[in-house]
Image (cartoon, rainbow, N blue to C red; front, side, top):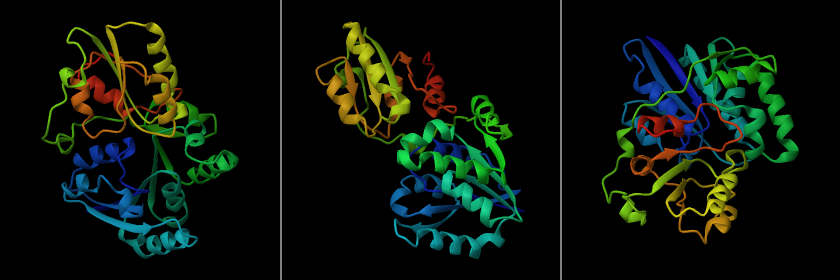
Length: 289
């Protein structure tokens, strides 16, 4: 039996968490014994139940924002490092811990984004270049997996060789909760309207502002836009769209699939993506993208 550690920051409701779930759902448990270690507190592990339902072992460092966080993480991982044959990390801090602490193990890091384009939305501007440089440095010690050919090519600019394993999609029944079903009638959208949908964080990289402005300028009563997601640009985009009955800014939801079912097209105006889960999910519902 090969023991694998999946090292992640948390199990929050984001694309990389879903991709980890899809991997573990189809992992041969007769050959591999997986354990998930999360670096941060359980309050961030909102999708922990998905993995518990698969019978997986989940351990948490329960790190919080304290000056001693990094020492607590290092102590915990050093104590557990001999339990694993393979360590697979994803995320900035997880990759660094993998590179530093698991030196005698077979180590992998999966990049589901391009740090140069993704990190400006995640870290303070004055530290961002330094954080990117640190991440790229420690990736030299890991076997890199990229989630798309695009990420693979961009990493080569920095001298990083990666193996491409594309993101996948596997419908998660845990998302399909009982309750009032979303319909066009419920959202006050005519049956004969063309309904577009975009799903993602409301951050600069996703470029939702351009999408909303385009719909505001087209002045077509037969076209509707649904945007699902939250982020620091929510208030700004709400301010642009609040006077329109054709643009529905609905925030973060857990039942994205219900909205996909009532739409005609999926649309994205992102400046940069790896291989977005939302597009894969839209294709699963036969939406042109």
